[in-house]
Length: 137
Image: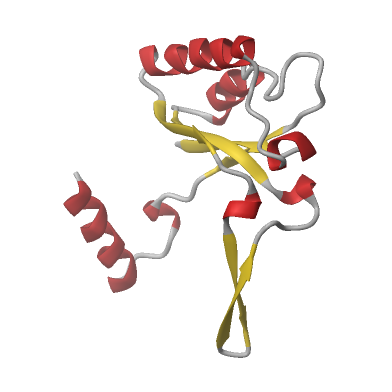
């Protein structure tokens, strides 16, 4: 089972403020623990939305919208992707996640399970994705 731990952006992360060394140390130690346990798949911080863009789909057309985006509470500042045996194990790792902007700062993480190909009805469409997955290995 794969889970993504999403770090919600704040006004400070959207302003491009870099984390304090103590926070970098705490995050490094946490991610080292994940790696030693064999559950870490990927992890990184994201640049502010001012450096990104969105594609809006409507009525068959696409529109590019440059960042920054309003509502920083809806943005993601980073993520950690883990693969564990159960929801409970994912929850235990998430509880240990360091406060994303320091112990005294407000912050929030969200944990979401990823779909696996076995979650979908079998068919040629899913087989196509299985082929892509196999070619990546």
